[in-house]
Image (cartoon, rainbow, N blue to C red):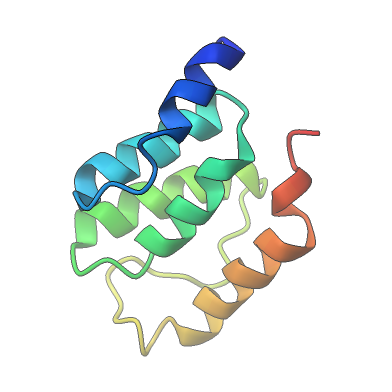
Length: 100
């Protein structure tokens, strides 16, 4: 379990311009049971890097109990448009309070 203080410290860095660092922050926040990491992961699904997208979807699927909404890391944003919208809706409807 991650101490709450670490989660707060990580929040200070969530707006980094470094995509890899931002992904790490998002994953770490989620591991600290801090929902502020979820939108970072959702945004990472749109990355130009397949590796970043793969890491992000893996973390999100764990939160959504295996659900992937049809998202495929190897596909383009255009091909994943419906899945990306579903992930955004998932966050708005329940992801924000997943750790409450």
